[in-house]
Amino acid sequence: MASDFWLIAGLGNPGKKYEGTRHNMGFMAADVLAERWSVNFADHKGLAMLGRSVMNLDGRTVKFFLAKPLTYMNESGNAVASIAAYYQIEPDHIVVIHDDMDLEFGRIKVKAGGSAGGHNGIKSIDRSLGTPKYARVRMGVGHAKRGANAHDNTVNWVLGGFGPDQRKQLPDFLADGADAAEEIIFHGLARTQEKFNGR
Image (cartoon, rainbow, N blue to C red):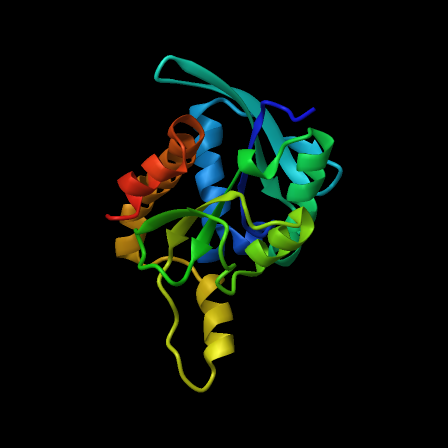
């Protein structure tokens, strides 16, 4: 029997060293949701920080879990699949928030299914859930310089922090990411795409 809970997972890497880096956009957006809906995180099997709460929007109430995997990005799927299995949450009730280098900083795209676009966290979740058919809130972080050391540049970029201008815009951007996750849950993917993907 599938649960009527939703699961929102914000991706990132645990530990001080990764706080505030581009790769931790998902964690930061999850923190915004946690603050909005008074979520208290507790440990789930050493795999994730997990909390549950209720959202009230547009006269409706939805129960949800909010997760921040502790598995490091490349094993995010272990955490997401464990929570989904434990609480019987189907992929169509899962929303994953993550950084995306194919989008400029400040842009958000919402999708379900399709390619992982080189994102190791998403590859891991696709593998662990056995399907890419869950919703994704892709938060743009722009990309590193191409060229001779493209791989190293990319790693340094996603694990790097934001410049002063971007830091100023970050609170609004994270709030938009949180809004997009709520919108998917309350109004469905198509309407959320109309609202965010054209911006």
